[in-house]
Amino acid sequence: MGWFNTFINSSLGKKFIMALTGSFLIIFLIIHLIGNITLYFGPDAFNGYVKTLDVIKPLIRIIELVLLSAFIFHIFNGVRLWLENKQARPVTYKVNGSPENTTLFSRTMFVSGSVIFIFLVLHLGTFFWRFNVHDPQQLADSHQYYDIVVGFFQIWWYVLLYVIAMILLGFHLNHGFQSAFQTFGWNHKKYTPLIKKIGTAYAIIMAVGFASMPIYFFFFYGGNQ
Amino acid sequence: MEAKKLNLKLKIWRQKNSNSVGSFVDYDVQVSPDASFLEMLDELNNRLEANNEEPIVFESDCREGICGTCGLVINGHPHGPLPKIATCQLHMRNFKDGETIWVEPFRAKAFPVIKDLMVDRSGFDKILQAGGYISVNTGGAPDANSIPVPKDAASEAFDAAACIGCGACVAACKNASAMLFVSAKISHLGLLPQGQPERYIRVQRMIKVMDELGFGSCTNTYACEAECPKGISVTNIARMNRDYVRAKFTSKIAEV
Image (cartoon, rainbow over all chains, first blue to last red):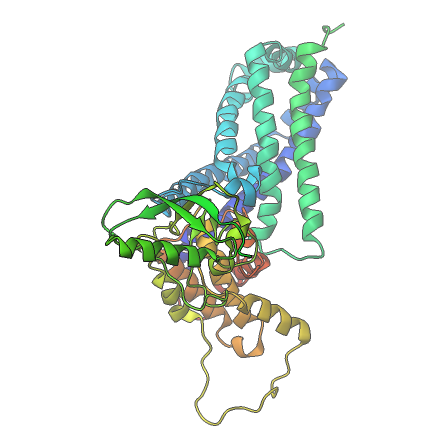
């Protein structure tokens, strides 16, 4: 396996890991958003959705494990690349031309990723922890999932952080989506412009989709009845 | 009638040698708008020498945009703000009277400053020595066109071969990555029949040396393509990625 170590520790291999784990997370977000949309259909729909996930719990746990490793590799590798890339230019430019020759999204992957990471920790602490670890039996009996989510979406600072993180998630995905294709070596003048458009559309749908929920429940939600 | 001269304030990076700490020094110059950027520096150096001051060290050779020697970062852009030209092809008419111009060397760990604006780009030579060639038997010259090459492959290989190895891609990249240069070299050989026998060993050897030299990794910002004086495309980087993954996962060649 010497060749594999050489591969994943090479500059190209590290890019490849970012793209591979990123692609998995891109697919995960689609499924996550579709599930969350049940929030708009009331407590029964959302609680029912969470209960359905409970039924297939062993499968969900396996997916969660893959998801966790994807996150860990994506974050660990991203930080490592960022540090190494900083070292590649010890003396920086006085005048930086990058605003004119690159997109904001591509330049700010580390910043947007870091904010998403902070959000992720908080997000797991609030929802994942409460749904899974914090007395799950009581939750399962009383179908309180919906109330927990809506409860958090009444806290102004939580909603604010949530929305900011989702905007930056959109930034991150807009670059990450097309970047993954490039890293896999799929760049062709026939379909690359389309990939970039799909990536932007995907990023907007994810950012708007996820951010709409806290905004709706904070400003427009009038209670269960 | 001669065009009105431009008054410019230059802020030029001066650094005694690779071990010393550099800084910007201000120079006020009067220059014809018809002068090239390097001619302006020549005039300034004449003045400095006349005053018994140390002239500014910068590199140039062909002064017609094909040798890739004259790399300077001007106002944050390698080879200046105009697309697809080398520093020697930049003329002062592109600047406004009274403008301040910042002139810096290419900045990368793998391109240490030798003096002032001159950097050591021998890292590129080391990458080429690692695999940027094809092995051929000696003997009589082969007949021209004896090996058929499809037109599209020939064109694409030629586009990649237009790379002059100036290092602007490294200078422009926020990670000081050399991947546009390396991928151009890998592509112009890998697209042609003559480059096939060593295709998958070449990519491994060149990337190994590239990594060892301390160039950064590509994060697909495409600043390299935007600043490249020859318009080398990032599709070459995609090709290099493909070749490297394929080489590592499927090739039976001994470990590199």
